[in-house]
Image (tube, rainbow, N blue to C red; front, side, top):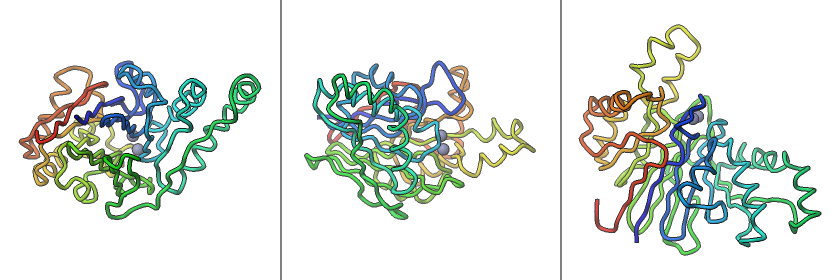
Length: 290
Ligand SMILES: [Zn+2]
Ligand SMILES: [Zn+2]
């Protein structure tokens, strides 16, 4: 058995033909967890061979639109196809705050289509199964697979002014995968990452942006995104063997620019394995192999 981590999107709000909106798929056997659903997540999942009905749960880190714009397509398409698969509503795991209302409004937006399809073929309107949890200030279990072999913990991360932002730690029989969500480098993610095999972390090259944003309101970006050098220092301290960089700011336009993300992580002192993310990058964990 293996655990596979697939980046379904490595982009940011600025549109890119190469990079879907943020998302990570973590799979162990028939447990498939999708963390976030930025633009074109459904397309990338399809490329990865996963249909919406196969998702065990959708985990949301926070409600910045780049992370949730494809929730509508995932939930609605699962509903449209449910008469074929019978897997029922999509389970959604998120903070019990803004998320339940957001998901409700997303589903309601297709009211006309829902009415037509209910008359035509569907048994009833689309729903999700909400696994809403209180914002955890220390890592806490928020979901467990019915088979009991996959456990999800969450912790509040530092993405102010977004208060309801979390990262996730997914434990399978093969190891531990942590997905930071959007955050500056912080002790909360460090605590979540203790003993992790793979840390999927957002990355922001402050050095490349500093001149561009100086004196503009975007200068605050450094207070809620993860400086790559500081991230390298944290990963070194934690001893995490594999660091996967995603949500790349600024988007690398060439292999050379992608390599600069790794260079900065090395400047921070990190000596482990670095993967600079691209869409559909896939990393596999095998039992007993690090
Ligand atoms: Zn964000
Ligand atoms: Zn984001």
